[in-house]
Image 1 (cartoon, rainbow, N blue to C red):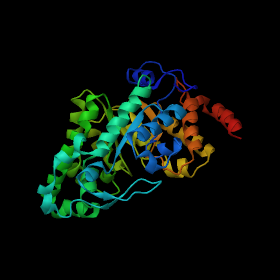
Image 2: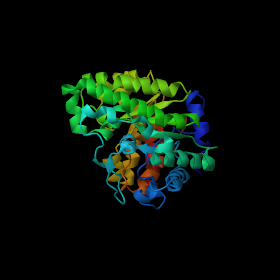
Image 3: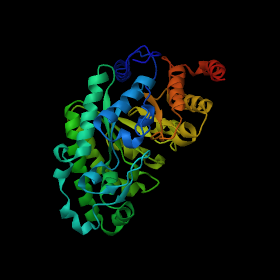
Image 4: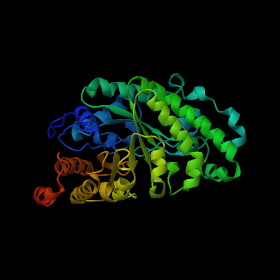
Length: 367
C-alpha cells in the first residue's frame, strides 16, 4: 500500500462501489505503455517476457499506488496471433506494417485456434504476467486485461482504410470479419476471466473521429454488447474506452452495458455527467499529451483539480484517470503529480470549497 494512502486499492474500490466511506477518490491512470520506463526498461525490454511485463506494472503500483494493474494485451494482439506483422521499435509501441488479411473475399482463411493461449505466445506471456502480478501484490490490488474492441481487432487483421471503406461497399463481409474478431476476443478473455481479471475494453477505431454514429450502431455496438454480456456471465466488470470525440454517441456507448465509461480528454466530463452520470461511474480525463507529456507539474495539478471539480458529484461516482494512454516519453514526475493531486483534491469526502486553500499549499510545495 502506498505510504500516503489509508486503504489498499481493493479496499478503496470495494468501498467506492458499495457507497461506503473511503480515504480518497480512486485513481486509474493509463500506465500501460509508459510502465517500462517506470521500471527502468525500454518498451522492447518490457514486452520481451512475462517477467518484465509484470515487473513494469508492479513498479508502477509500488511507486504510484494506482488503483488497478493493467495487463497489456494491446491493440494488435488478435492480428499478430493470426499473422499480421509489426515493426519492433526499441522504445515505442509496435505498429502493424503488414496485415494478415489482404482481401475480404479470403475470410475463410481466418483460424480462431490461432488466438488460443496454447498457440499464441503473446497471449501466454500476458497470462503469465497477470499471475506474477497477482502473486506479488494481488492481496492489495486487482488487475484487468487491457484488450482491443471488435472493430479495432478487425483493423489489426485487415488494413484500417480498406476496412472503413468496406463498411459501405462490402458491409456483409465486414460483419463476417467482426463476427470473427468478436469470437477471438472472447477466446482470449476467457482464460483471464476464469482467474479473476476484470476487462478494460479499448476500441480506438470506434472513435467519432473515424466513424459516424450510424456506423457505430451498425458495426460496433452489437458486437460490443455481446462482449460485455460475455464478461458479465463470469460475474466480472468491464470498463469501456473509445478514443477521440465521442460526445455525439455517449448514450450509444453506455447502451453497450459496460460497467464504467472511460472518456477521452476531448469529451466534456460535465456533459457526460449530465447525460449518463445517473447510469454508471465515469472515468477520466486528464489530457495525456498536452498535460501529462508536455505540461509542467503545476499543469498536472490544475488539470486534476478541473476534472474533480467537474465530475466529483456524478450520481453513480467518478474515478480520476487520464483521457488515454500516457505516452512513453512523458516525465514520470508528472504521473507522481497526478497521483499526488488526486490524493489532495480527491480526499474523501470531497469538498471543492476547500480547493483554493489546497492549491496554495500545493503551489508552495511545488516551488
